[in-house]
Structures are given as C-alpha cells and as structure tokens.
Length: 511
Ligand code: FAD
Ligand code: DLZ
Ligand code: SF4
Image (cartoon, rainbow, N blue to C red; front, side, top):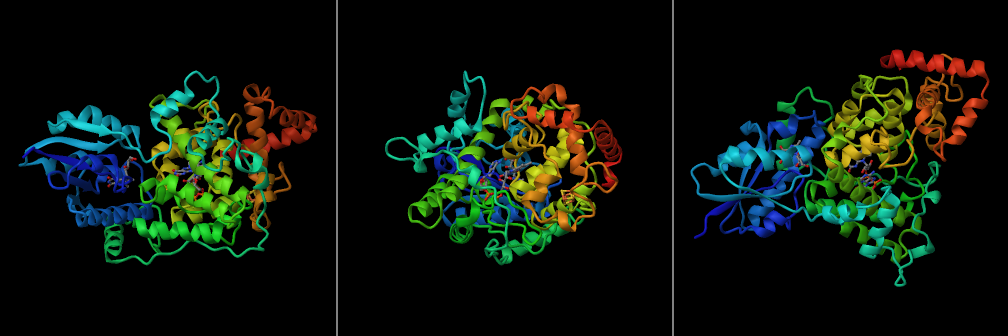
C-alpha cells in the first residue's frame, strides 16, 4: 500500500472540494486541522472571529469524518504553537510520503510552508492552486501584464465577459451599462424595514469554543456574546437565502448609507462565510443574478452586489499576489502617526467613529462605508502609520485575511500604493458623513464648521490633508477643483482651519 500523506486544511479552507482534498484519498491520507497560537496571536484577532473560525473548523472536521476521512484535529486547549507543529505531531511514528496543502491566503504563511517547513519536517510540502476564486492568479497576471494602469473597472468588465454574468448574448452588459453606481448613493430614509442578518443559536460544539476562547483570551478586544454567526455551510446557505430575499432588493439604493439605528442596513454579511470557504463566490453571484432574472431584485442592486464579489474581491486578491512582498512596505503618503487608542476603546466624542468602533467590538463587523469613510478616512487624514492601521483592520473583522484586507487598507484607504485601488484618495470632509448618515445631529462636534474649537475634526483635517499633499494631487484631473476651492477661500479662514487641524494632529487621542 502506498505511504499516506498529510493534508493540512487551514481555517479559511472549509470547502469539501478544496484542491488538496480532491487530490487526497480518504482511505489512505490523513487530514490535519489545528487551532494554534501563532495564527491566533500574530495580530490580536477579535474574539468573535476566533470563535467563528474554530467553531466552523470543528464542524467542518466532523463533516469530513462523516465522509470517511481520518482527521487529526488539535483544539486550542492542546496548546500547539504553530501549524507546522501540528503536522510534526501527526507525522510522528508514521511513514508519510508528503504534505499536501492548498496554497494559503497569506504571503507570510506561504513563505513559511515553502522555505521553512520542508526542512523542519523532513518532508516535502506540495502546494496546490486554490481554485475557489473566479480569476486564477495566472489569469490576473496575464490581464495585468503590459497595462500602464491597473483599474478595477476594466478588470470587472473582463470578468463579466469571462463569466457571462449579467451579459446579453450579443456581448453587451445587461441594462446597457456596466455600472449603476450613480443610482446607489441614497441616504437611508427609514421607509423600509431593516431585515437584519439571520441569527443562529450556538450548538454544543460552538458553546464549547466560546468557553475555551473566553478562558484563553480573557482580555482580548471583542464581545463574545451574543454569538449568532453561521458556522456550517448549510447555515451559510440560509444566510445567503435570507439576504437574497430580504435585503438584496434595497442593497443598491442604500449601499453607501449609514444609520445609528442599525449596524447592517441592507448589506449581506456574507464576506466571512465566503472567505472561510463556506460559500462559493460564483454560486453567490449566480444566485443574485437569478433574483434579477426572476424580477425579485432590481438591476442596480444586483449589479452593485455582483461587482463587489466578481470585481473588487477578485481584483484585490490579484493585486495582493502580484505585488507582494514589496506591497506591504508601501507608504507613499508617508503616514507615520500612532493609531489613536480610541480605535480600540471607542471612547471618542466623534459620534460616527464611536458608532463604527462599537459595531466592530460587538459584531466583528462594520459595513464597507464605515470601514472606508469613517475609520479609514480618519486614519488617512490623521496620517496613521500604515502598518498600525493594517494590523487593526486585520485583527478586528471576522472576514479579515491579509490577501483581502491589505489592499483595501493600504491601497483603498491609505492610498499608500500610489493608486491601484483608486486613482485618487477617498479623503472626505464631515459633509460626506452628514450626507450619508444621521450621526452628525447627535454629535458633540459641529459638522457645519471647520475652524471653531468644536468644529467637526474631519473638516479641518481634510483641508490639512489637501494642503500637505498638494504637490502629489494638485494636477489630478478629479482633484484640481478642490485645490481651486481651497485657494479661493479667505486667507484668515484658511489659516484658522490649518491651525485647528494642527492642534488636532498634535493630540489625536483627545478627539
Ligand atoms: P456587502 O456590502 O454585502 O458586499 C458583498 C460582498 O462583496 C462582500 O461579502 C464581500 O465578499 C465583497 N466585497 C465588497 N467590497 C469588497 C472589497 N472592497 N474587497 C473585497 N471584497 C469586497 N473585506 C473582506 O472580505 N475582508 C477584509 O478583511 C476586508 N477589509 C477591509 C478593510 C477596509 C479598510 C475596507 C475599506 C474594506 C475592507 N473589506 C474587507 C471590504 C468590505 O468592506 C467588506 O467585504 C464588506 O464590508 C463585508 O461585508 P458584507 O459581506 O456585508 O458586504
Ligand atoms: C485567522 C485564523 C486564526 C485566528 N486561527 C487559525 C488557526 O488556529 N488555525 C488555522 O488553520 N487557521 C487559523 N486562522 C486562519 C489563518 O490565519 C489563515 O488560514 C491564513 O492566514 C491564510 O489565509
Ligand atoms: Fe462624525 Fe463630524 Fe458628523 Fe461628528 S460632526 S458625526 S465627527 S462627521
């Protein structure tokens, strides 16, 4: 009988037809899964994120056993240091031919698997392609090769053509336009019932994980209870069905809206399930497309939703693997300030920021506009150190893995890569937040003022950002008007605004 192989399945690889499992043989090979200190501690992951992953991993291991696999599962209580140690334990006393792994989503881990593990284990480690994406890394490289500028919008159109999603037989986009973003900027008017995500009662397995995480990480950021995430593929399917039924019809209209009354609006909360492998991105897009075809959701909603998955999600992954490892060192706007402590405590008078941090602490979730235009925008305007803000986003969200989080943070929010995620920075004053939310009415700061002592910090910081990066952005066709407005402003007013911003930048902790 040929020697057996070890198949390491990572926490975000919970997919039965994963390439490593497809290549393996349940009668001969062993699956290894492990909850280890290194993965849990290389950033201080939110406790709910850990419970979600460990509970989903344990349920997945049980599913594999039901399908006939032998699974060596190392729970948190076993106290293993890292994933290589788990493999070493499973190899002990056995004749092992090789280790099979579907390639991981983070450069750090891929490098360790390639460079350190074979020697450390005395075994060859074979990495297989991760086929759970709609664009392979080779296809992305081919698409990017020779292009002067990489733009998500053009990548997205190519992906629509390749997959046929929302395409007419003659090759034209359904509805005659590729993008309905202009229709998707409504403020929430309170007229529609907000469906909220479905909530799943934790079973005995999940309750045990809750207890173990509480015991091992008593002081970590993030509420453990209430815990209601899906932890199996069938629950994740239910969450998808709930979204398609209840939220998708309004997803487009209120995609950019924020409201104090609700942390989810019409967002899907599917990213954590897709990223962990519980849902397949193509099937999610096809299900949304069917809703349009059956008249259950309008085109602006369906196109907007599909663009996020088929476009942004695939694009950021492509950028990550194309640009790493140098990407992580980029900091083109020279941002070096410390991350204010209120990103963890939520103790700030800025209502919008306090609300985003509260939602983050409670759910390990905040929706895209809170991430981009509230906590992200503030980090950009304050010039927060890119590594510090990257580690914060990677730690606090249940859907966060470096391949998706880093380009969003370093590229989209901090504009530190020079513009792969947007040709101009997403910098905005308080006016944007006022337009898209109801936060400002209950805020200690005055959104209509930029220079007074109680003026909205976003306002003066915005102009300070514009002024300090003048050389870089003044000639940008979509920013020259901003510079003209600034130059037209009364000189005393400009000085007062910059003085207010200087004071804020000196003591950001006091905001
Ligand atoms: P919805 O609004 O319902 O969108 C549908 C789906 O589209 C999401 O589930 C997600 O799979 C995909 N999607 C939407 N926007 C993006 C995007 N910009 N990049 C990649 N996929 C996208 N998303 C993550 O999955 N993991 C992260 O670690 C992450 N970090 C982020 C950090 C910052 C600073 C910013 C600005 C955005 C980040 N995003 C990240 C993207 C986006 O905010 C989340 O995907 C989204 O908020 C998840 O919530 P949802 O499932 O309700 O999304
Ligand atoms: C995020 C995470 C955490 C917190 N813990 C584990 C773990 O204990 N075991 C595991 O296999 N995976 C974990 N993960 C997910 C990994 O960090 C993820 O697979 C890599 O970062 C690659 O994307
Ligand atoms: Fe946020 Fe400024 Fe509005 Fe306060 S006034 S909620 S700080 S945008």
